[in-house]
Length: 193
Image 1: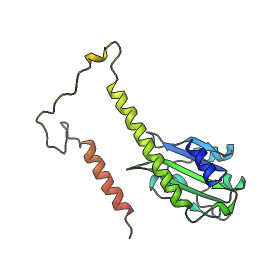
Image 2: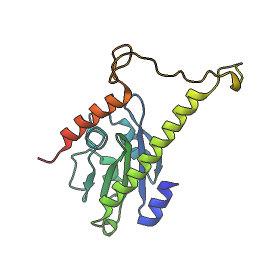
Image 3: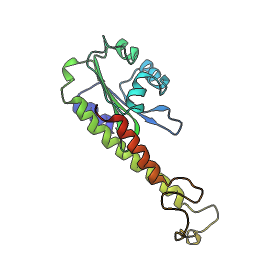
Image 4: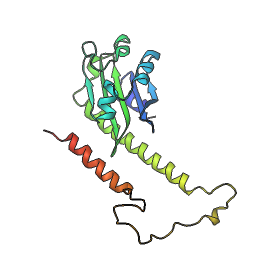
C-alpha cells in the first residue's frame, strides 16, 4: 500500500522495499515496476556491495541524478530498463531495517525535495516495521504452551537481588545497555568532521 501511494503521489514508475532479516541479507519485500533483471540484481547484492553497503551498512541515502553516467553502485539493469535517476534511503529507527528505493524514466520528476521526502517516508516505514516486529515478539512470548490453559500461565517473577544493574546474572549486558553502547558507536561513526 505504501508503494502504491508513493507511485501515485510522486508519479514515478518504479519503487521497492528491501528488508533485512536476521542473517543480514536484504530481501525484496515489495516492489512496483521492477523488471525481472532489476529484481535479480537487487536480490543478488550482498551487504558488502555498493548500494546495500551504503544504505543498510552505513545508513546513508543515495541520490543518483543520472544513471547513465554513474556506475558506482552497479545497477546496470536500471540503466538497461531506461531509468534516468534513482534515490535509495534507509528504513531507519534506531537501526536500519532495510531500503526504500524509487526511480523514474522521467528526469523532470526528480525534484530538489525528493531525497528528503524519501527519507521521511523511509523513517515512517522503518517505524512501522519496528513496531510490527516488537508486537510479534511480544505475542510469541505471551503465547501459552501446547495444552496449557491461558489462566495457568505463570506471571513474571519479581526481580531478585543479584548482579549490578548493568549486567545480568551470567555477566552479560542488559539489552538496553547493549543498545545504548551500539548507538554511541553509531553516532560516533556518523558525526560530521
